[in-house]
Image (cartoon, rainbow, N blue to C red; front, side):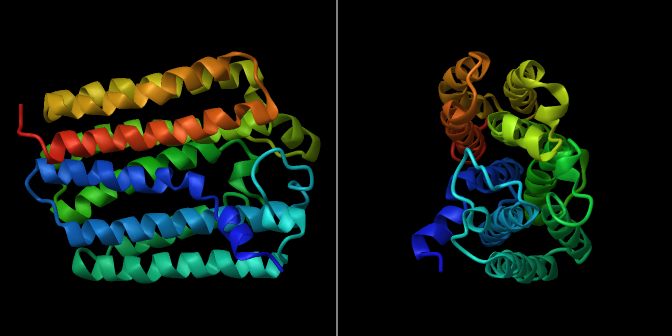
Length: 297
């Protein structure tokens, strides 16, 4: 049986910035609009974290039963390593999704019931990333879905549940924030898939990195990091110059970009993954502080 420490590692806590960042950014936009509701933001955070943990366990299960984790470069996988049974990991994934669903229902009851459908779509997307007979993560679509669900849906959804507004004044700033956060979330996945590209090619897992090749994947990483900066400038024009505090993300992102471009492979890319996660969290924290705690200007 897996130990508690192994279960925690299997939940991949280092990926949690991808869940926290959208809620921070979306709440910052809501606060700038004078509509922050901290209780609802907290519920949104629980949903986001539960979905992130759920997708991590679901990926562990699905990749494990397919055998694509038999020769891992990255963190421990419970099923692939034999530390836990496939059934136990699948139950852990379903438990996390259940938490997300229950809290999501409460959030919908307090705001808008159409969010139930959106929440169901999020859970299905989380499961079928590597689950099912034809997972989209094996067809080079992982980055697209990460941008949609951990960028657009998560940030704009967080803003909406607090403002309950679809007015342009609310949608545009949250769209800019979502684009930046989504780009950095994609950059995390790009770095992850670049790290695993050799092993994925062997087992027939056609991630976007496998499809593009290493050189173009490195270029895509740089493009995503730069796109986050462009989106931040647009957000500052739409709200306040203090949103540019999000540029703190460049502190970890610049050296990570250099490493990614240096033809590093395998385990040597693990620091890039970690730095990109920190960059995304710094980006969102800067936006949150700039839009929430500082005076307009």
